[in-house]
Image (cartoon, one colour):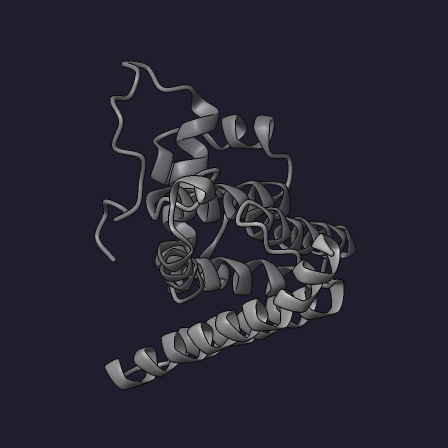
Length: 206
């Protein structure tokens, strides 16, 4: 991976970017480049051009930094693909494609795998992961509601779990055909959710 992240914020930066922001951006680059096994506080501090004491002031442990980086990285990718807070401005067809792009973006999957691996040795991180998953599920619910689509809890949970599996499999794909198949599976799951949700909508309007 190049030194410049393909989805980093390209808006004009202040002349003296605060240390916390520099550390988060450096940590994201290190995590995506070197993976969880190569992710260390000392490496992140070097990447940011700061002392390690600066890093531990903001993030006392590696996992404190990791959770912030995963949230930041996922949000950057989603923002770059125009899916946050804009569902009402997109057609359902465009929203469908944008969500597919998110699910099949290997960077998000790589971040989630990293934090899942780290959680094996940190119970607090498992609690964070559980909360993060609930928030992502609720985000999907709210996004669909903007289109007047009310999904049953079971159907939405099944869709949420299905696309998580698609993202993980896509991360391990190595051919264009594999990636095309991942997109096809996501679109199929999306369409099935919409079809399953129509009876709920009708019953609520009757």
